[in-house]
Image (cartoon, rainbow, N blue to C red; front, side, top):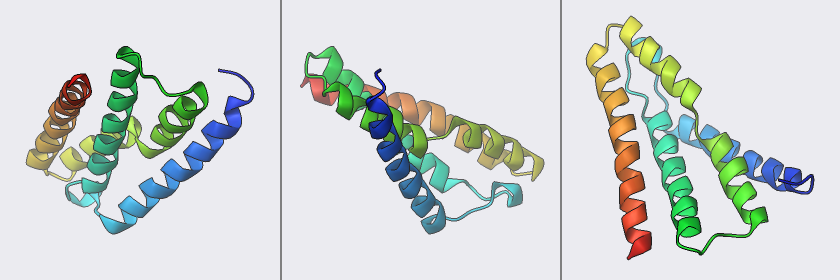
Length: 126
């Protein structure tokens, strides 16, 4: 990473955060009320797919330029995805008595994320 990459990270971050906010408005829910957090699941799944694609391309000798990698991987996906919100929403769901939603959300996030990575790697390998 070089100092010139900070601009790319900032641009990607602005785009990722904006998309995350738009998805949160579109798929509004409240884990504190026991509602399934579709928005966080969606942005984390999308970010996982994008990062898996970057990794799979790099492992297959087709890596993007350094500028594009920090724009998309660090900036965009870094602002789009969120582990901290995932963790807080799990606790909020459990505290709201929505233990089934908490278990489904946690399992879907973890197993789904791994499945996304496996599918993307398989598609890139051909």
